[in-house]
Length: 216
Image 1 (cartoon, one colour):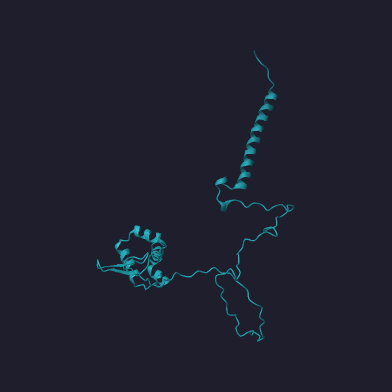
Image 2: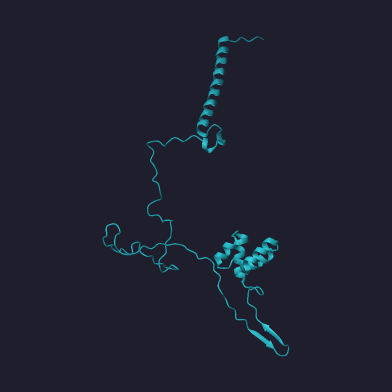
């Protein structure tokens, strides 16, 4: 059975299909270029230095006020009073004579201004004398002497000093000379020779260091 068709209608339908396909292709290109302008040439993988600069906000758009709201609680430094301070240090005036060095006029005292500073003091060794009681048994002819607590036998330095020095050198990497200088110990003393000998011979035991540090 033969079906008749209109050639003009067929041409119009082909033209419609061609224009529809072209319209779809052009929309894809517009979408691609728009995304390229917003995100960059490589899309989401574009480096931050290559991302296009965003345009400025519209002129009619209200601008936000910078900073926090008025009356909010500040988060800056907290100063302390003289009653709460551990130490109050008076400072000599910048011009002790009380005369202006520029014009020679007498300066007016306007009081003082407090400034809070957090300061620390280096660890210094202290000379401690232990009174060790001695007891003697005439029957056994034996002498009993108490031992100093937390001190190695025949040791000059206490465990606190050894633990601080070992922690500064082996844990924080401070040279032994600087450790001795900061703690007030002779660099050529027993501590320096002991540390140098153990470092060179490799006989420093970690268990001994842990036991000394644990007793701090």
